[in-house]
Image (tube, rainbow over all chains, first blue to last red; front, side):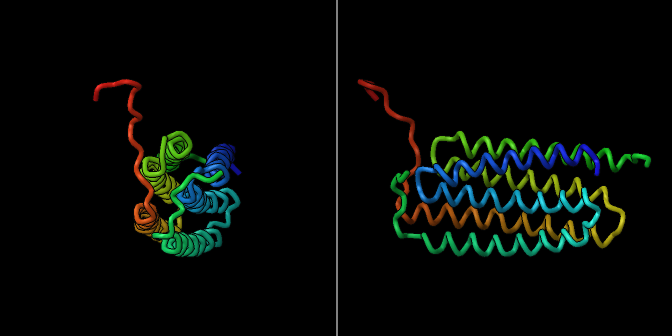
Length: 92
Length: 109
């Protein structure tokens, strides 16, 4: 396992933790959804990096692809569900 | 283990992608309202993820893995802007107003 990949993995984990702040504190409902979208795209790269650092990239690639498909569909369903229902007011 | 030119180029691409992803995360944290945050998420994250996937792909040796990496790249490039657009449209239809610069006290304009 190369140390360079470990550093990149740690920085990505830090960015993911930062985006969790939007999910917890974001004033409106849609800010929380923004944080969830940020999590979804970063997880794909995290999975690929884990595959490259452990040497099982063929397995992790399939996992990353299916995770991306599922998170995309879930995100679209959430966006469609909250469309036109209000939720623009600030709520903490 | 010898390092070829492609390995170094892949590491540089990984670093560049990480820079874009961190900039996107800071933008989502610091920008003033929902639509500006959405802008940071949509552009920075798509570019960052694409750069990192390309950086990993040039370090692989088997062509099957490279092809699948390109599949991930195309998928992220298609899916991420679509999801961001759907979210922005949902927020606009729900009556969320864009942010404006606050007016000054007693200003004539």
